[in-house]
Image 1 (cartoon, rainbow, N blue to C red):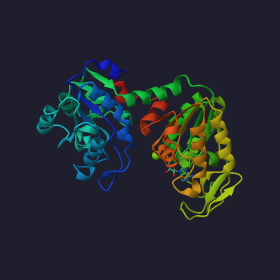
Image 2: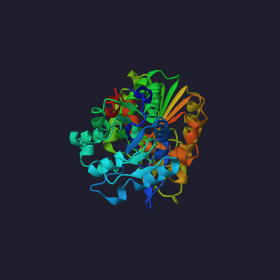
Image 3: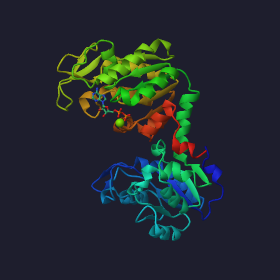
Image 4: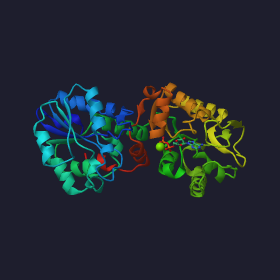
Amino acid sequence: MRTLRDLGDLEGKRVLVRVDFNVPLEHGRVADDTRIRAALPTIEELRERGARLILASHLGRPKDREPELSLRPAADRLAELTAAEVTLAPAVVGEDVRGFVERLGDGDVLVLENLRYEPGETDNDPALAAALAELADAYVDDAFGAAHRAHASTEGVARLVAQRAAGRLLEREVAALDGLLEDPERPLVAVLGGAKVSDKLGVIERFQQLADTILIGGAMCFPFLAAEGHSVGSSLCEPEDVELSRGLLERRAEQHGTLELPRDLVIAERLEQDAEPEVIDGVDVPDGRMGLDIGPRTAERYAELVTGAGTVFWNGPMGAFELEPFAAGTRAVAQAVAAASGTTVVGGGDSAAALVRFGLADRVTHLSTGGGAALELIEGKRLPGVEALA
Ligand code: ADP
Ligand code: MG
């Protein structure tokens, strides 16, 4: 994969940078600027090298040119975070946009409008890719979160620009995840939770081959527990996930990694803030109750294994951590990951949100900004956005 080091002299050159400014908005402002900050190392390096920057990103899923999904708030936030002159273009491509590009000075930044205002973006339309390519002399992809999609602004345009490279963020993401998969310090412990087994099936299978220990938590443990014959009450547990889990458990003996399930649980009648939480010692959930967190004994066991690991990968909360009564298991795991002396890699949107909530986001070796892309890389899939940078 080519990186910024391979781009050579950029003085006065127009560089199209695919960034991931798909940020949450509230009242027309950026509610969380993590993704904008994550792009700053690449933006500042290119500016220092005298480039003229054209930034492109998608935001949400506009069906039309919905003004609520303009990149205006992201451009405004970027302007606060950099000393650069930041301008918002009136569209993604076209005559007007070319005029804005021509007026750029060295180190200036032009932010294109929401890429998904153009239907050709998600279709990987060659005409849109060509129009984007025409704007610039060089192309940099720093949008790891979009690297698993072959879109016009990722795969399409990269194939058309000879001078192309991965940005710093994309480079760091791929290096951290490759390091985890290729030659991890052992023992490698994977902590996997979250909502659904079917979302994470490929990741669980890969870690059954690679990891020494796989610790299952979150709603995802119930299909496994059901497959083992336990009652799950009204916990999240879909029949097809029970079948998938049964298959994973049956193949367990042939796999390298040992898979552990919770030994105790926090249950309640409903997934609500004022529901009365109850700890059960065991994993049979009575009728009319749902499992909403791993229990304290399980949390202690998982934390201990994380502490002793050479490498930890964590994806998926251990419970419904958004509500305080069901946050203890996720907090215990997050604290163990933060305190672990081994290499720690965390992926997944909600897992990242949990780390932020507990004030631990800067205490891990690598916090991935790309949920789906990180999981696909772990599954062993090739990311079109990365392949196109070869
Ligand atoms: P990530 O985004 O980190 O990959 P997921 O999207 O798979 O994680 O799952 C996160 C969601 O799963 C959270 O919103 C959390 O509340 C929910 N969750 C975890 N455990 C449970 C549970 N036992 N019951 C209901 N929801 C749960
Ligand atoms: Mg999620």
